[in-house]
View 1 (tube, rainbow, N blue to C red):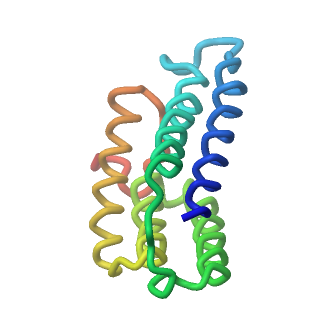
View 2 (view 1 turned 60 degrees about the horizontal axis):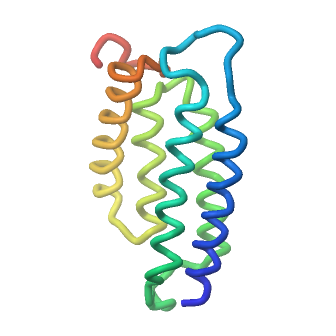
Length: 146
């Protein structure tokens, strides 16, 4: 599809901008062992890989099974707003798990699949950032459990 190639090219351009701006990030003092540039560079690399995949091998999705774009954009925007508001009080794991439910449903999954994927993604990401990268994330009500 032509749209996939356009989206892939746009993703590569965004990744290049993230790389250009993210590489120059430096903290005046070391507050985290990895520093502020690690996350933007990792995210840029992942976005670039996805962009290259879209450019080289576009999918032939059936437009009849995709949700209405307008409704999906509104649902995604509402989910992002709720995630931003609930991130601190609920903590990373609970907020991320809850955020994944509507996202999975937008892409055609069942709600329970969103819960399962969201929980696995949230817990594994939390452990990666907290234990491996020493990045402090809000724990919320699960403070003493994880």
